[in-house]
Length: 78
Image (cartoon, rainbow, N blue to C red; front, side, top):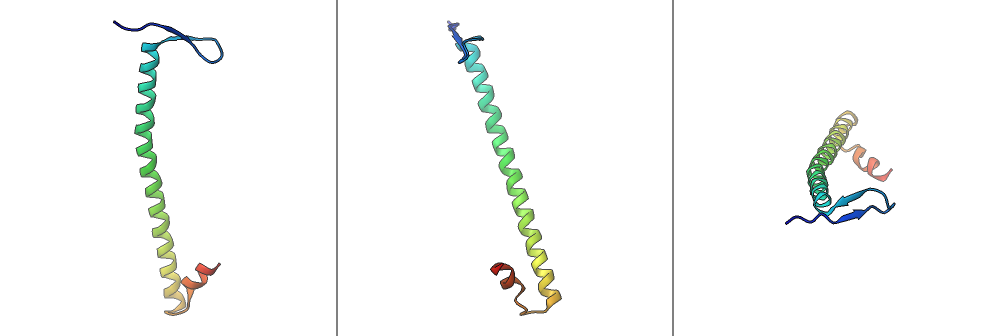
């Protein structure tokens, strides 16, 4: 036996049954979970690229300036 109790939204407008509400809620939760993982992977990938590029930049500058020039320490202090 399915519930078809009518509910009103907060503005007092559209009616929706419990069955429809639960279905929409389940779809919304699935969408959020699915995209949460995708977003976390994208953020992780961007952070890794940024750190890789910074490491490469600092390594190149250190080679250009000569070993012991303090490029990394000067960058850290600014």
